[in-house]
Length: 555
Image (cartoon, rainbow, N blue to C red; front, side, top):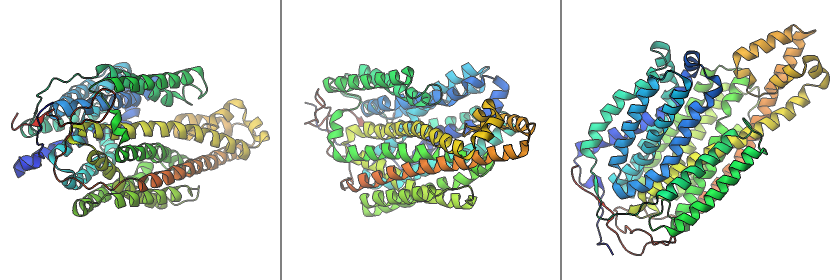
């Protein structure tokens, strides 16, 4: 048995100057990794024009998403053993090098590889930064700072497309990546000198096999949902094979975690009601809300005829609402020490926003949508940082990294599931409505090839292809009437598909509210006492305290 160690929040050992230098640097690290998720989308047309490789376009984003998702659980566990500092610095270093490589890429294949490396760095940062905030403050004090970090994340979402467009227009798409370099170089020294390292007394047996199994399982399942309905049909052997493989690997991972003395994701944590429900809510909201929101842009640009820029401006108020609500909510929790009522209230606000969004139609004013997005952002701002805090507060200090990374992991997995599920729903709903609105005679006049083009709900977003198809229709007898019928059918069908999506998202939001009602109100700890040691094989909770490492002064 190891000796008992008293863990202390770093805020009690750092000077005020050190504390704010550290917090600012951590926010900067989070901003860089978060903004990179959105900044690249604006530069995509220029990247394709320069490098080509349109058939590989989806991998420009998929490679980053896969890499960032699979590293999160492993980093969360290892940071509990070796401390956050080494991983934050490693994440910054990887992100720095990969950003330079992306800026120097000479073809799409190399850019995709560098984006995957960048995803590893981004995943390490996302897994470590929120956990580092947990090292600095006790749970009772942590909430107001978690709100600030969530605000930084939302600010990155607001600025990303604008920054990407400005850099692309005035310097070229390569600057979208290279601009990360000075920010990273500014963050590294402050973290190096102000974030203490952890001295590890014991020699842990790290579950590398479990980490590999989990990573492969995550990649297999993510690819299945990424490809389903796009590259392969949902019932195709490729998709069913991937899903079956993911299920088998998940079973193998559970078996491995039960037998290993130092599991990557200790299974006994899921016996903790607070931990289980908090992560369940995160997963459900990832599927229902974040998945559904990915298709709002299709509605705005197709059903309302808005430009991509206007679509972004309409959605921006969501981030503003999230920014304000996360800061306000964090301050309220810090004052009251209670989080359950705020979680339930936030989930109810999200439910109201979903009810509003399911009324979208072709005649809705754009500013109405912006108002709905403000409501949704407020709900997210009240719920998301609170769930992260709830998950952290439900476990002992030794499992802070595991709790934080689990929250991030389930959020990302849920988002991928939701996007794939709603893509299939949009396609089916759209096709059924389109065939109803465009009668057989009109479809016969257009011809199979043109009908197939208009049966794609995203067709109008490809301006070049849409212009060519429109020109072809106008050359047909009574072409103007046919074109109007086809575009009207497309407009109303997209609106119907989006309403169906938000109807299902509303049902999922109800489930999220119900789950939030069952989250126990565990008092927020004002210290790190009660830290537990490593679990015994079989996934049982630890019985003794353990000196797995304590923040040490200096380096």
